[in-house]
Image (cartoon, rainbow, N blue to C red):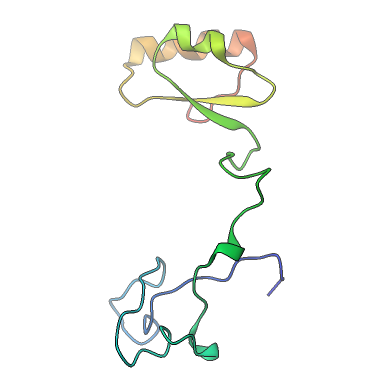
Length: 113
């Protein structure tokens, strides 16, 4: 594994149980749990050191900062260079089309077109 990659944090014994989900972390709580005792072969624990760098934290994978938009007037506060918009789910079809049209004119990226 590449040293910069995060390990896959899995639930303990998820490889043994057919119905247990392989993904998703649950803290091991058993009194004799090898994973809780940090035995080397039993999988990694999520810790502070695995966090993302401060420069990229809270950014969308595209590199833009996400901003929620509910109405047309919210578009005036957007910086097209560093921010991208995500249209809120409460916005209806007619208003959504207006927001998309104005965002395209202003050159703003839309994350959930």
